[in-house]
Length: 497
Ligand code: IMP
Image (cartoon, rainbow, N blue to C red; front, side, top):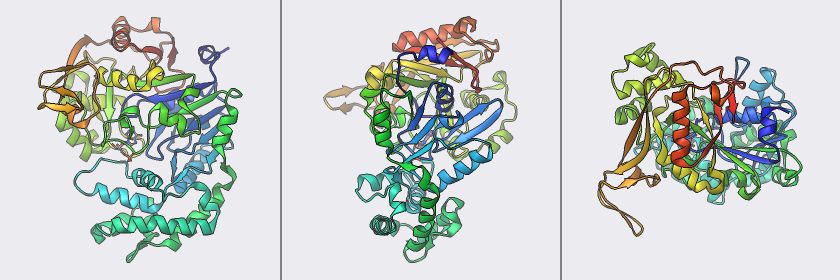
């Protein structure tokens, strides 16, 4: 029996979520566990997610399709809680097929939420104004808004032309009222981007050409018909019958319900939302693995990030930067060359390849934050106890590693219900209220780094003592157990306790 099967003996449903702001390496963990899985299902988000998986040196990037697609024989479900841009899904299918990957196991929920061109327009129009969130620009927020606003379309509507047209009119009507408040030239420019078929859906008077959308989406529907099915029932009937792997998207700190609101995505990225988004309940999950990048963190987009290396300078650099610009400005930076925290943040980004799989944006980098981890574990309840520490190889050769153990609140008096926060107060668990988080000063404990190459380690015992000390410190200070460790991007570079 393989190590994975021994580890998961007696377990039928495993969920993999990120305890941070996403991009923690869930895709790799899912890919490793998919060896055990018979079903791999996604339940939240859309093509804002991006998983990069490396197998034998070959890189695969998936946005909507669950990472388990890379394991032959696994049924891969895009669940009812996902917002699906069918055009992106078809492109992804074509790309994987071109790389020799079979998509025969793909199943798409008939009641998944349909993402339409006007959702992308609305997203980008809003992001062009002050107060932006720094979204991925994929239309995710407006698509979920349509769902909550009771005017959303679902995947199966693409197969029923009359229903599709009538529901589309209703959704477009609401969108037009909002789009009408933006500068026409801005909208026109947005409509020309390739993601919106380079102007194919544009209509000067109505913003969107209904007929063009109907024609395109009916085509998509026909192409996807073979994979559209009732996945909620499939999932319920598979409980206790099959090994089920639930794949989270984004992370708990980006959850619309539990995250650093409003700088979040528009779905519940926690284990609770994930289970619901595949037609199940979190109670059905036997084991939740919380993926935690160590011993640094990243964040994409706007919003407070207490341990950010380089603070505001880093936030601005990443908001306006790109991988190429960074390469030109800081070519081949060595750990020893970093003269300040900002440069250290750049080095961490370069070493960890921390550039968005979906957008290519540089990710903001900072030290591992235990108050945030304590918070994420707490909201997960019994699901918050087991973690997988990833990207452990990234900080090899970094001489000084800091871990944020708690915060000092440095803002003005602030009422959290009946609890009054006052300046100087210590906080051991983060409070996701953005006003509070923006006024939290990290308190650090310093650790010497390690220099040995860990990328070939196959057991925890083989790791350098200094690294083992760091892992034990995180476990002891948060009460979680590190069940697995990822020491490199490849499938094989994975240590199970
Ligand atoms: P949206 O999901 O595109 O609406 O973006 C909302 C926020 O979530 C922004 O800060 C994004 O950068 C962030 N976000 C969305 N998807 C991901 C992801 O997969 N990784 C990291 N951040 C993400």
